[in-house]
Length: 316
Ligand code: AMP
Image (cartoon, rainbow, N blue to C red; front, side):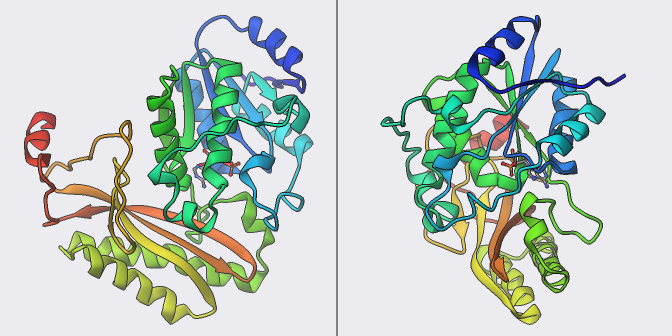
């Protein structure tokens, strides 16, 4: 049976409501305008802890001037209705001054992982994400925090930050939820016109093409170029990047410059046939809307990095 979550705004309200929740806690952080992707995080959270806390906050420090901070959809009433259907216990929907009672003069630099791909296009983005996620985890003190694979680099950044700053929270990734037409659900999809929405389907098709050739044994650069060819054939899509990374460490394997990964990222994932698991990432603008998406791809016959063989043995 579900019930309406308790809605809090100030820090004092949050602390009071948390004190009434004995047992383990799972945290789902969102910017609101909730869709089934967010709700899937809440459903999984229910399985992992006694209580689920959802935050709804459009965090100003992760938006650069000229990005869509002001335009970002804010739909708290509808969000509360949606959360009631999946059984969240507590919602924290703070105002900016509740999260930042004094302007933040401290910043968190997540290191090299935050300077490539999304971090290259949005240079201040991951510092803002790291800051707000660290603050909220410190305020809520959850046992586990859930983040979607939709934002795969964010997940890798947060794993690195939480690990290196010894923040005692378990990170639980949740697979991407897609619409029937294959487009990854995103609050920003509502910016797309009908025509742009149809064009946006090419991102998923391109990733599937990459996964298909990877499955058949293609190597890094070929996987990326097959993926790119689908985007180019569609036309009208302003590609930012396509890159292949190690699914666990986020080490860049093809598509853009390489980067050392931070200590604390997850270990490489080795599939049952001994091949390494990759993640193919894409970012592009369709009209004025910037979309990101990604997909797991097996790296059959990929060159095995030094030390990985023993590690694969360990994991088998
Ligand atoms: P956002 O509100 O966009 O900041 O997203 C909040 C959380 O929901 C993040 O951990 C996202 O990765 C996750 N999320 C957003 N869209 C999806 C999706 N389509 N599938 C799975 N998780 C998602």
